[in-house]
Image (cartoon, rainbow, N blue to C red; front, top):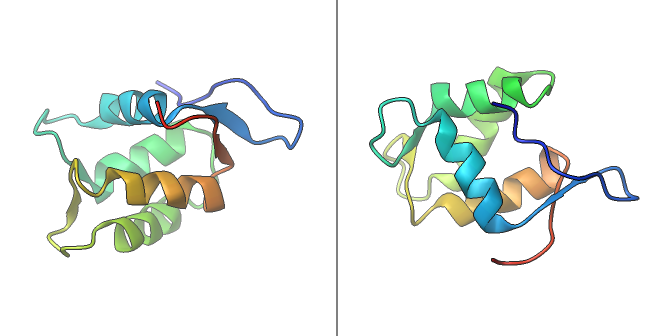
Length: 95
């Protein structure tokens, strides 16, 4: 369940926010609508990224604004920004 999409000339993967969220939620194994650190780590690993545990911890820390240990629907946009900066993703449109 990789989160890949088309490659841009900048060698970043292009995808819409909606597509990013849809692919990320494939890793919501307990189907509670929230992404845990472990689920995020699996998504990063499936994406072929190195240091998946470190990146997942950093992503969770930056995205989880209420500090409850999960990324919910209100915080998912924070994770999109993290993916753009640290995971080689490029947003092509908001939807």
